[in-house]
Amino acid sequence: MTASIATPSGDHRTLPGIACGIGAGALWGLVFLAPAMVPGISPLLLAIGRYLAYGAISAVLIAPRWRVLLSLLERRDWLSLVWLSLAGNTLYYILLSTAVQKAGIATTSLVIGFLPVAVTIIGSRDRHAVPLRRLLPSLLLCMAGVVCIGWQALAPSALAPSALAPSALASAGQRGLGFACAIGALIAWTAYAVGNARALTRIDRVSAHDWNLLMGVVTGAQALLLIPLGALAEPLRHTPTVWAQLAGMSLAVAVIASFCGNALWNRMSRLLPLTMVGQMILFETLFALLYGLLWEHRLPLPLEVAAFALVTASVLTCIAAHRGHAPAEGHGL
Image (tube, rainbow, N blue to C red; front, side):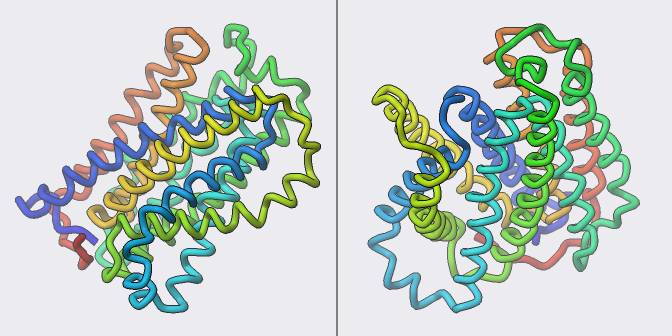
């Protein structure tokens, strides 16, 4: 997918790719806060609101090029859009929101933090990929970092009382459900990260920006289909204030995370090999932790400081592992 990082042309692709990965992580990290900011709203309604807004924005922006894009896409491409939208957007966000509300940000961040390991291991099997043995130090640092991030979640008494601390989130049964949902979100987004990167490589006739808009349209259509399910699953008896909060949060998350964050991620996915794409997911975990600390009005604990250092070392070690490696064939933007 990308040229060697050791060459000027490699730097020309790798440095912008890393910058896009950091930007996407900073924007996506905000989605961990959204469920906590509107705790009275179910994860299903949060997903419906977010993706209706994302779909509406995408439909307006893509309208002038709709006929041209229809002529460029094949049946296989539309099937990819459908399952990628479901795995990476609708299903992932419902599971993530449930995990945050039931188990807290720390536990959810811990589980989601293993995304880089899963994606990197899968990416190491690609043709021309960096061998897994060269990526092992980076993966070990990554795992150590995410364990540090979630350690307080495994020992709730170490945290100061807070609305987001697992100790304040009802029973062990609810935390167990949240943990299970976090595992489901991990599986769904791993499938999305791998499938989306490979789809962007295969479908080089569509720009990364248009691919993001097409996915927005498909995800918006899925959100429309979920409205009856949402009405059945939860009585719609919220106050006007709560509905206004949901509308504002949905629009903000749609613009910041879905539209802008996805655009940066898609561009990065065409600039970096899959073994580096996995490492870029770490930035979402780091920013989610940072935003969680700000929301809880506290300084990072020693293990959380260690997590920042370990995750940073993991990314730098991954970049070093790719230095001088033979370039893989890929598509440009």
